[in-house]
Image (cartoon, rainbow, N blue to C red; front, side, top):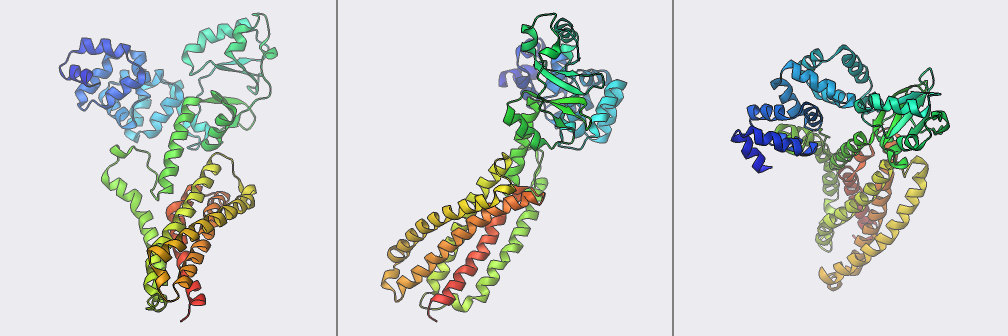
Length: 452
């Protein structure tokens, strides 16, 4: 990569052109991302064969796409848009500011503009917004020989020919078949005799997460998209689903760590934007955490008793930390199960019952270890009522772990049922709740069980 960049800087364009023609598309896209000078960028892009240039364009970042559009001529932009698969063209336009969109659409053909505008009307993150209208379909009753002739005629202009679709006169989807079945069939055979009529399809308003689950469940390479009348309007391909999975995983990780999701990479996001994404959540969590301070203040007399107040106060971070970690473990597991469609609201009581049993075992284990620590490391066995104080702390530990596991398992499922993102109910949010409750448990047990 560095050697090619040096050749570009030294203006050895004939060598660069030869190297570029032998490189894979993702590697060329990576090279363009590393060119800092606009003049070198546009020259290097122009060195690419036209068909390769359009394909590379779909791989580069939206920021670099915008830069190129501003640097290239209208004719060059028009060629790129016409060569892009329609779903890639829609994704590109959807990311661009209005002035760039206007310039791009002005250079494209009327048919392309109409198709792009139609796809842009679909709600974001749905099958309709992700699909391409470039696919191979046949009318019912066509022979294998004619079907293969149609593939030869239009196959180079569509995104995939691995899966083929059969429709009736009203464009209602009635069957699917693979290119393999078509190639191995007799030329005079009718495609209706080869096609699979038990069709898995999605409607245009299907959410992208549900779409990804369908691909995972059935190991699809592409999936037909139909309207409410079951008419075939497009297909979604596996490359788009891989991007969906990456985006959804990134979003969930950000939300689980109390960060507002961001569609740009970390290095391309400015400091102010990062601050804006993080500060609202931190403020909310900080304000909610004041409840723990209020509880400590209210129970100051109890926690400052000379006999055992220092030990109780010293154990608060351990108690809160253990509870938060226990709740975080449960929530992470349940959020993953919900994301993979393994857990639904119907499984609520089953999940909670399982987590309660796990919590009891964990609570006993942690409490026993904590009891030994308090006696022999913290030296409570030498103190008056040391065994009783250690017992109260460990009982609080046990109850906190059980509560944390139940809360960690419950909130993501309930959030999903309320049409909220389960990832919102992840570690920071749950930890704040558990911190408050663990203090209430400790102070309550201390007041009830320890002598005044």
